[in-house]
Length: 365
Ligand code: GDP
Image 1 (cartoon, rainbow, N blue to C red):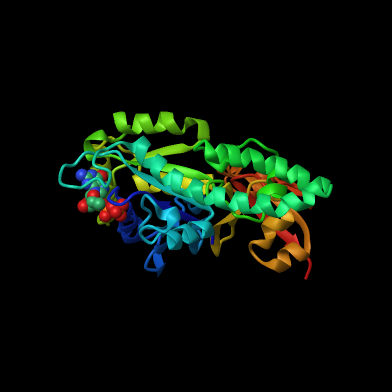
Image 2 (tube, rainbow, N blue to C red):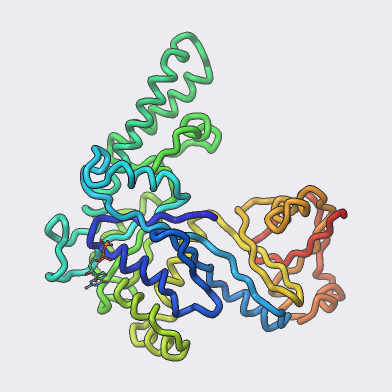
């Protein structure tokens, strides 16, 4: 599955957040959680559209889609030089698809801050700097490899070197690789094979005290302003509150608790949804009487590839797909009524599946 790595300085609330995710009693019924390894958790992605489909179809079961979170503890200043468990943790980050960066935005004299004071922007820059230093090493190595070829007139190597120089400059200026503006082709050609850490999409979690819910505080505002140029999202949560919510199994009790803090949904639910979006993922549905199910694909996938998520044979033997929009299904209530209204479309191999499509695939035997 696709993985989000949770990173951040020590004592910012990563474990509290991860434990809240893994306790997950809150949504136990519909959103089961399981732990594959001590630091890897699978969560289902909350999706109100599934509830709507369940009401319309009353299937035997409803299967939501999932993503994985990995708790990557132990990243400290100097990690790129091997401090702490430095290199091991950087290797862990290399394996994830996106980064969830937890930043401390709460004051608490009883909880030591590793750098002595609460300053979310500075904290974030410490982590960034370690990742950037590691990336700079990778970029330098790649450039050395290409230089000889470029000198002997290899045009492709020259072009890639040119792009790599942009990455090098950015990294040297303390900017992450994801801020470098090049085309997808240029990026692939230059860094496609070196797996940079700071090119991965990132999402910031501002961990605030309960008094700063729901909208955050001066610290989280400062963080938001600082990451604006990365185009990154900031999710405000209170890890402490999340761990309390995670213990509640009664939905009514949970809702009451949330409303006391001015929340309409748990921070975890917000975080899971934002992570899903961060990964560039979208959902389509199948809606049979046996099973209503959410399927994960990447934005831009065509119908056969989307069908392949269900079964590889569906992709190989794809004939056509029948597509219904959820809004039409909600309005007309049955598939045949949707069809009568002329809203059921039949699509071929070139159809690009849209988020929220209800699909039925026709395939050869
Ligand atoms: P990690 O080192 O980043 O995994 O941090 P932990 O999750 O172990 O948290 C460090 C300490 O901060 C623990 O004592 C937590 O109980 C506390 N903590 C975590 N989140 C909050 C919060 O939102 N408010 C307050 N006051 N304390 C928190």
